[in-house]
Image (cartoon, rainbow, N blue to C red):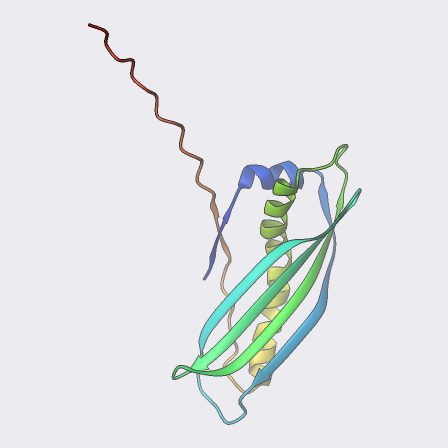
Length: 156
């Protein structure tokens, strides 16, 4: 499954002021080739981003795209969009860079179970083995390298 690189320090700065308010399915589309059968090779893509940032409200838009192929032929395509809403209680405005990291990590974390169930049910209803969405892996963003210390040049 996919691994997302996240700045956990930025996520933590926002998380301490955030409470999950709502996870809402906002859009979906699905189509498949009714003549195809059998297991599918899956391509799964996702992105979560800040949709709205107001004083005490943060909305995160999460878009998921599933493409199922058989013998290199696209057989199925599913797109799912969720809106994840948080209440923010920070006494001051949070930096957009921190909110962006929070949106990616927590938007994914909070919508992932809904996407998992939706894909499993929908692929089965389309006549294919149900797709089992795995665990989303998060990896810490590498720390920037410190500039190399320059050695003083010996004077002669």
